[in-house]
Image (tube, rainbow, N blue to C red):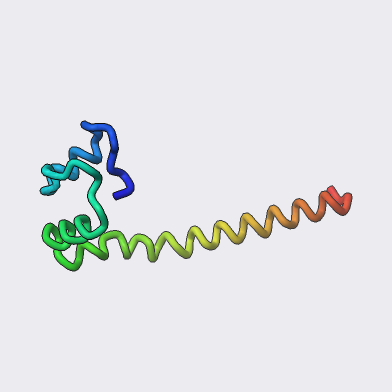
Length: 83
């Protein structure tokens, strides 16, 4: 749904049209997407990419908090006049 182009001929629109939405003149709504996903890929289609998110999540979390802590220390030391 996020990548559907409003301009006719966009790549996202052409992909959706090949998946059975060629008669749709406006971007598909949530129920159309859910129905087509279930028909096309079954229940497992709803969990596609889940395992990669389990790997990516803790890594992204760790990087964000480490960067925050390092920047906080740098700002506080500069504010205190320590270089």
